[in-house]
Length: 248
Figure: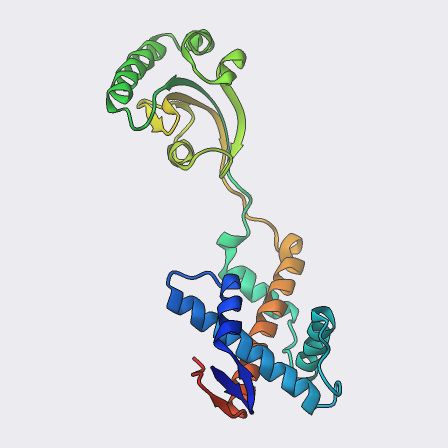
């Protein structure tokens, strides 16, 4: 049981709160739930103490509005100016790139990933087809139509333009590192073994600052607010008489 200025938070209340705080261990979930309820009760009491209401409402929406009012009146946010945004952009340019694009076609030889014999057989067959394509590259579409287990065979194996995240990781890891042309080794994925030709690729491009500056400003504002709230909560909790809970 936790006591905050004489108000109790029971073990049952903490146990009910745990469902909203998934964690690797039960102990961590319990602590996270206890932390959330302790902070909530301290904020509730502070709302009354500062005269925002005579007593906290039972309606959670009204309660949340009062707590937001309390926070807004007690935290001060720094000004996020143009210089701050530009500095963040320069220091985090890798975050402001569009996805690279690859246009490719493939031939899929289906094989279950757990079937080692099938994977081996499909890999050997893929190597044979790759050798054939090196000699007769114009046969890719016809070989896809004959051998591919993917519905793309109806388009000669064409997959169109692919961006990162649009296909399975084991496939795109190789795909986005390959140069244009026939990839000389088969790619094994959860779907089987692929023979792949990269038709065209476009590297990731840096987005201009003007396009992302509003996003940067909003992020920095939100980050500053979270830090200010954290500092305020640490200060506020230190003013309370709390038993049965240790703030971390």
